[in-house]
Every structure is written in C-alpha cells, then in structure tokens.
Length: 123
Length: 123
Image (cartoon, rainbow over all chains, first blue to last red; front, side, top):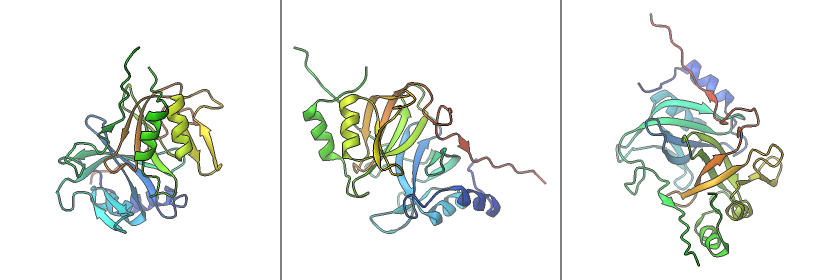
C-alpha cells in the first residue's frame, strides 16, 4: 500500500517540518523499504513535500533546474512512499519506498554506488 | 576495523566531493553498518570531512553552533566509519558506521524515530 495523506494530515506534517534552516528546503533521504539500501539524497520544498504526501510518489526540488520534479517523470522509475519518519529536530525526512526500477540515472539501483575503497599493500 | 585514510587518499576524496552546491557544505547520511537503519542526517564542510577521514570518527559542521563537532564529543557515542559511498554526482556522502551507544540526543537509537502514522477508520 502506498502512503497517501489527506489534507488535514498533510497540513499537520507541513507545520512540523522546519524549512527555515535551508531557506525553504529540507534534506530528504530515500531508503528501500524492502532491503533498507539507501537509494538517494535530495531536497524538497514545501510544495514538493505536499505533492509527495498527496500522491504517494516522491517529488523533489531540483536546485540545478530550479523546479519541482516528480521522481521517474521521464523514466517511470517512481519511488512509492511506504513510510515517513521525521528526525528529532524536524529538519530532515526519511522516506522508505517501494522503488520501481533503478533509482539512479546511471541505471544503478542506488545513487550511492561509488564506494571509497582503501587498498594498502602490507610491507 | 575503522576506515582511516592517509593524506593522499584524503586528498583524492576531497577533490571529488562537490561542496559548491551548498556553499561549502555537503549533506551526509549516517547508516548503521550492522542493521542498515538510517541513524541521522547532517552536514560536513571540507575540514569536517578531512577530520572524519583521518580519525575514522564522524565530524560534522553545526549550522546552529557554527563550528565543527565530533559526534559523541560529550556523550562518547561516536560513529566509527566502516564504509563510505559517494553518490552519482558527488554531492552527497553515505557513511556506514559502527555506532557506539544511541546516536540521538534523545537517547533513541536513531534520530528518525518520529514516524508519520496515518490512522483511518473504515466507514
């Protein structure tokens, strides 16, 4: 089941979230609800959060394109919201999602696919 | 084993990370390496990242206190770095950690403990 909120529930969430610290934006984390992989990090403004809560599909604020975008708007690789968690001071949001297709534009299943590997030869 | 990098390795990481998008800061995600719970979201500037990579303990930039802080500097609840992943465009970092004690100042094991729960009565 996708988590979609009604108007009263959305108002309550919007009131709680602290958008002030980042001048209208809040950092969000997208995590796979099935295997708990962290899939991506992005930002939402109030409208993107409202659209996410209404539709059950993640919407973000693109700082480079300066507009709202629906994740998967061209690829169809939507992130369907299953659970939402606010952090202790309400300035970050964790979305646990059912991910349709790879989330990363590179085709990888997570955007965090570049591991820092330390290789040392023992002397 | 805690992941501690040497100077050359640190230089390579610092060069990769895009600090420009947030005027000197990069959003970071702290995830438990054992059970994959997302523990907290924070920000690092270049110095905080360098200190993290050198010591193997997470250091952050506090936007409210306007200074670097070592996670657990008063509580002893350090986050020991096990693995590091950059995202696809190098503007977010995921740290998988071994967490000593609860990470949240409230005593909860994760800062993301406020779940948005929707309760609807069926008519």
